[in-house]
Image (tube, rainbow, N blue to C red; front, top):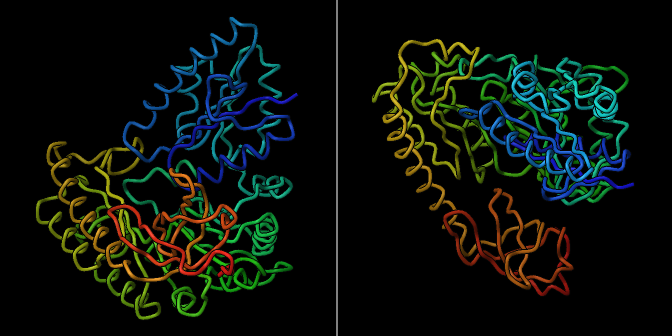
Length: 454
């Protein structure tokens, strides 16, 4: 009997990967994904603890789902409700206390046990099942036995956890210490993904460039540069990306890979968080702005067409107007293709949350608007500069209009163009007609009848 599964994913690409694997794990139990929770037999909220008021947003969503569960029960059916991810890891006991109608609560290192948890919940007579152990090795051992999904793009988690302990971040507490999967395990999963149709793989990790996985037969560890080179040898894998990086882990070998491996895309997300040395020290980032500039210079020397994105936090405790001006100055000097910026919000249990000098919300708002205006200006200029260029685009999905497909450029921009559906899931040359604020429009560079996969 087919059951319907709805998963709502919050946060980063690693949560997207985790949600996909949850669906894969539950498929043998008869669960198939649906686009709405209204008629779902199981609803899972895969949560993120990074953003402001993350837990309260989860409880608000649970309130809505509880009503759906009550309606289904009145109609003689039932709904299993699960809360997964980092909020579940950090606040599992509170979820059980405040939302006793939730059936299963499990952290990001426990979802490999979903079938067992579902079975336990069925026998628990309404008592929630809580599992928030850190069993990273067990997680990946179990996932290796689970078939993945097909598609032209795929995420592949190679590293989890964080040992950096930035003052604002909960990841070390919710995802645990840094753990690297072995190189043979990653290579095997990559080959399975390519065999299932993937032509682009994005390597994921909280500190993905800190990855050091055991080599074949338990040999010497590989670093990320070596892994990228080996992955590029897989027949059919045409694009490689990785995220999220830490500046201190940008090794000489990894930088060289950007110059030497054509499959490694010329786009790098390298978060800096602030442009003020004083604030970087307070954040415990363990690098200063000059170090960041030197790393970018080396990257651009290796790959002159490299585009960069970053993360920024405004209004960190104690941030002054001068500190914020340093951030604007850094953004002006680097010239990002895009960037993500957020107001600082205290995360319970982190050192920054205990700081006495918090920045007023009105000041945070004003600074965020100023920073985003500068970032948007740079992104628009970067996109506009694409006009007239011909580039390989991976066509991933149908567009809004008939006869339209949407793909991704090497720089992660969405590209809209008219193209036959037979080209979907292929990489084709596209001439860019116009660069818009958030996307590009283009046309096929060659007749569709003679287009070859790039």
